[in-house]
Image (cartoon, rainbow over all chains, first blue to last red; front, top):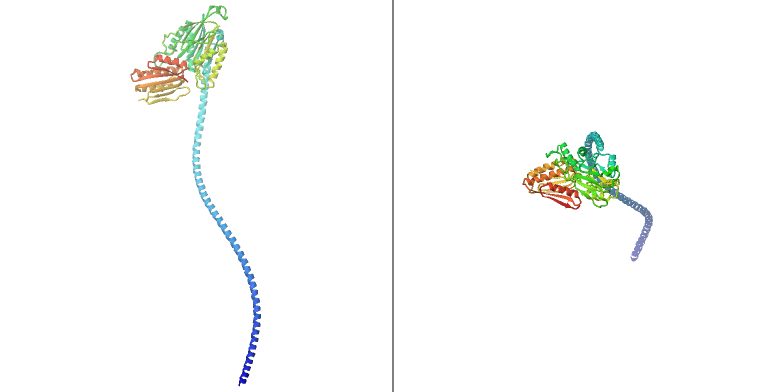
Length: 411
Length: 129
């Protein structure tokens, strides 16, 4: 039995062994196949892996590119956004600016309208002005013509006045050592000088009629005529003035009535009574004394004795000739003895009353000083001096009044 | 009833006139050389004619002239005569102050002449210019 058992066992075992070997071989074979398959697969896989890797790399690259692209896109977007924002703002600004401009335009247009209206008005006004100007031009011409005519008429009157006044020759012949400074304010004058020679005397008057210019000249003509008349009756200065006063009042119908004019004249009248010797010596300078007589209506006489440094003033009777003066008014007569070299002055108030450009009046006090300061000069030189002095004093302002100064030096 | 005051500005040829009826103080100052003085002073005299009817108890005229022409001289007398009228009518007192430049003997003399013919208080007042 055991053997059998053993034999069976060995047989079983041998069978098992064979099976196992077979199995092993097949498994090995399978394993081999598997291995090679695996290897193949492995290779395949590694190939796949490589390709995958490549692909991944590619993908990464692509991704990177895409990301960059995206970044760029975003940047662009941002910029675009910013730009559009700026544009928007700009647009808003432009819009508001536009609005402003529009308003401005409206304003300008309304202003333009106003201007146009104004222009229209101005134009019509300027047309009116042009018309007016034409009228004024015509009027101006008329006035100029009238002024010219009046001036010419006054100039003609001046010739008459000049003809009435003593001629220079007569003056020189009658009073060789004297001067007359005569400066009318206007063309004709209310101041006048008058000289008359009688048998025994030479009469000289310095007169200042009320007013200047034309009314002054009217008065002066009348007064000269009345002086001429009076001197035919008397060569007494007091009598002459009394007569002239009376006559003028008569001619101008001057009474005490309120509506009568007060026109007349202020005057200083002097008569020179040279002694007989002078006439015997045929107008040769005399060494003898000279007696003068003076009477005045509101105008004094100044006397400077040779070598003296002050003025003796002989005061006038304080009334005018004509006007409200009594008909029989007496004008006080003064007799004065003069010596050779003594000088007398009669004058209107024009010199002392002249204003300068500072509105300062020259005044009698300064006039006296001036006259005293020129005593070393000849009478001709004195005239030149006084004339240029008053010219300088006056400067470029208007002459205040007619000016008349007469100086006579005894020789 | 007179207007309260009569005023005229000073010009080259005409004086400042300022007559105030409320205070009775009258001022006349400057030069009086209008071409036609008689015409020039008519409005003033018309005003004065009214004032004289109903004057301030004390009227004072301060007159300060540098220069006046002979025609104005007569108008100045007329002015003084009108003021004299107030005293004559017993309607008030009147005083004239004649102001003259200390150096100006012509204006002093003119003042003295007026003083001698006017019958109301007339003061000669000197000033230094």
